[in-house]
Length: 416
Image (tube, rainbow, N blue to C red; front, side, top):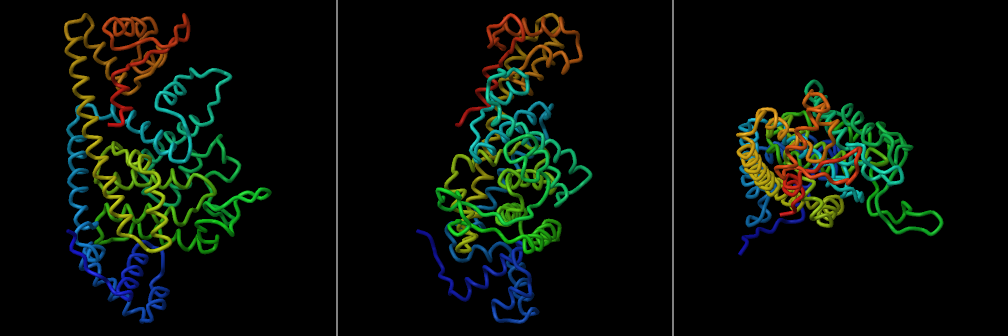
């Protein structure tokens, strides 16, 4: 049975103010006023909670808290980081894992594109009459994340980087008319019942983010919180930052995807992982209603603990999921390499295999470019891998043929 300690309403209010302050949601002076204490007293209160660390979040429920879920999340993420650091060719997994994250993060926002759809799109194999709007959104997520990963080598996570990624995310897709790459200049709102004539109205909205002038103050505090020295454990900070970005909702569209993308960049910037192999969006998508409810409960009732429990559970489970997928892909790669070991030109065929793990759906032109070989040579490699049952042609056409590595895709798309 859980050992619960009941907090008085006054203690709960103090705890909420400290957490809101640490998340950049409220300034020290305002928090002090709401607690009817001096600013100096409030700063002492913050210092006391910092000294107690995460236990301050936890003492309301000792059985199931961020404090006792944190070590598990840190341990599992550490296992993933260690595995990634020992991979002989980590780049061959980064590409498909980024695409899986892009598909699932975009699916939370209502797109229906699959990983297969994305690879088809990147191979320019879509029918002229096919609606590609959803898959373009997913492709833009890939572009934004790739850009963020490269740009963050010289520019830390910042409002500037966030705007630049948003510009790529919204380029040429629905929502492109509402200022891609720019913070909103008008009030927005989330949810609410719809009026037959006017659509969703602010009066019935579930959440109304801060107005523009307050939004800029909140963004300033948000950026400072990202870079300020803190005793708060980094995974907890990532959860706080993700919530805070969603609460500010600084763009007219694309906030959810940018908020999830930020978590990946921060974990890498803070050195918790070296490669973007954690697909946290898979957990959020599988528990979509809980994801929305937990975020909403922080805004409406200050339920930080439940949100952080949910967030840390997601980190922990997806770290284990990534480890399992990497191990299965490693086993598959070893089995393929053993089958090809005695072949003529085995070295080049083994290089072809690595391209397949990066691009499990591809055409001959893509292989030609990836390996820097003549077209006929790339075609010969593909034909040989077809004979081994590693690749399968999927169009049935004589020209513009497309090839698929089914077993690799099964590992990437599996929901188990």
